[in-house]
Image 1 (cartoon, rainbow, N blue to C red):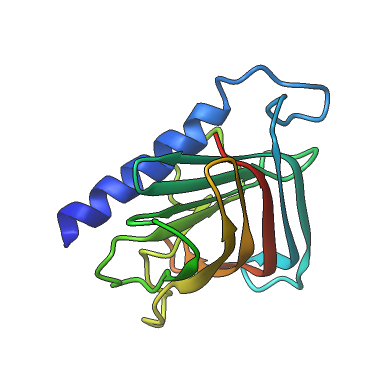
Image 2 (cartoon, helix red, strand yellow):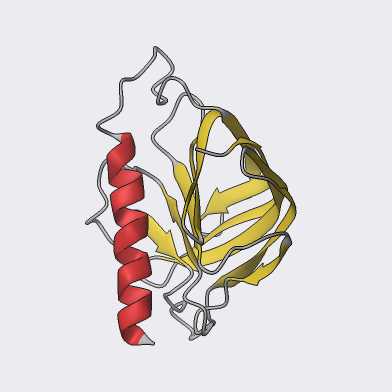
Length: 174
């Protein structure tokens, strides 16, 4: 189990880091994104929620692994979700100790993946021991498109909270 989580965490870091090597447009997002990711309520460290919107997000399916990566328009904040064993629509648990190895990271700055205080993972507990978690519901999945909903609660290396609620994703699958 720990090995699976380590591989997923590495995949999420590579996915987020890979964004920084993409050609950028003037809004600090990867150009050519074919998906949209939004969250109505999104925030860090106990602050009130704001909206998250990425109009240049990416959805990638490689075998049975589905990765959703989004950079908030005009910022370096990002959301990355990695799901294993995706063969169709369904509900995928992001709870810290899930046996499938699903996970998510919410980042204040995707260009600094090694800084544990800027990255909030579903694989880390809060300072009071509350587990990270969330859920992804894929409501439509074809070989070319995907859409669904999500919510995420993650924690950074200091045990502080990051969250994305009432989230949606839709777009082309690469």
